[in-house]
Amino acid sequence: MQRLRAALSRIRFTDIGRYIRDGAAQQTGRLVLWLPVALGVGCAAYLSLRFEPPWLWVVGAIMIAGGLYALALGAYSEKYATLFGVKHATQIRFEQEGRRAIRTFCLLLLMVALGVGLCKLRTHRVSAPVLAASQMEVTLEAVIVDIVGTDTSEPRLLLAPLRLSGVAPEQTPYAFG
Image 1 (cartoon, rainbow, N blue to C red):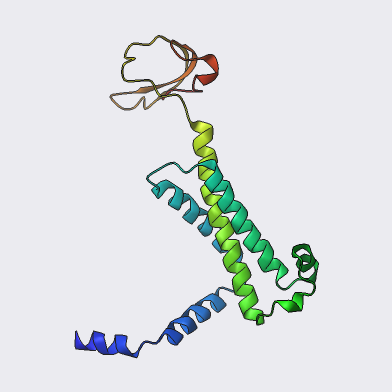
Image 2: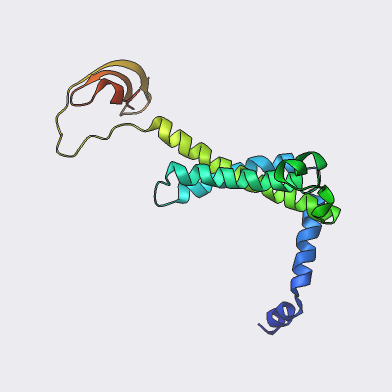
C-alpha cells in the first residue's frame, strides 16, 4: 500500500497530459481506423440509454458536432474560415499539433453522434405495432418465408403477414419471426 501511495504521489497532471499527447502522436495517420470505433461508441451509447431519445435531440447532437468540426476546419483553413465570419485564419492561433488534435477530436465526436443517429434511424425503420395485452386473439393471414432451426426440436417459422386483424394495413409489420 505504501508503494502505491508513493507511486501515485509522483504522478503530476503534466505527466498525464504528456502521456496522452505521446499516445495521440503515435496514432498519427491512423485516424481512419478510429472512425468505426467512434461510430461503435455512439451505437453503444444509444443502446445503453434507458429511454428513447427524441429525434430533435439526436439531430441536434449531430448538428452541434458537425458545426464544431466545421469550426475546427475553419480554425486553420483560409477557405473555411471565411464561411464562419473569420477574416483571417490567423485570428485563431493554435500550435500545429493543437489544431490537428482539436480537429481530430471534433471528427471523432461527430462520428459518435452519427453512431447514435444511425441506431435511432434503424430503430425507427424496424419499429412495428405492439399488440395490446387485452387483445389476446388475433387472426393472421401470412405466407411462410422460411423455416428457421430445422435441426432443433423447436423450428421457428418466419412469416410475411398479408393481413392482421385489428391492425391497419400500413401498420402491419414486414415479418414475424
